[in-house]
Image 1: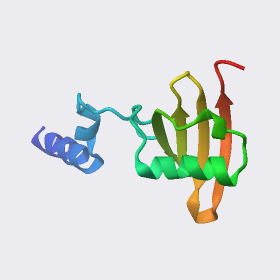
Image 2: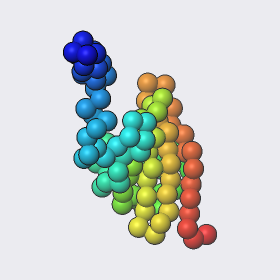
Image 3: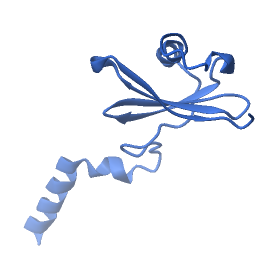
Image 4: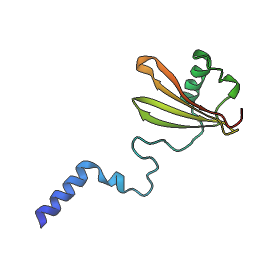
Length: 107
């Protein structure tokens, strides 16, 4: 019995199970971060989207919030005060930047 208890404890310690038991955990691995005000790095990505991709998204202005998701690179979900959202996928090591989705609440 004591050996089993030690093995279970060792397994939990090695797998980081305490992270999964944390009640204050706010992000699921592979999931989107909570919405937050865009940092300078986020706004640099948005600036690159509007200036280098020539997508016509400049008229949307500056995003009010952003969510991020680690994928093979980084996804950014930019949200605007009027409810519009633009999702962008970035792989900077490949110099790749793609607008994945544009959701506009008003035409």
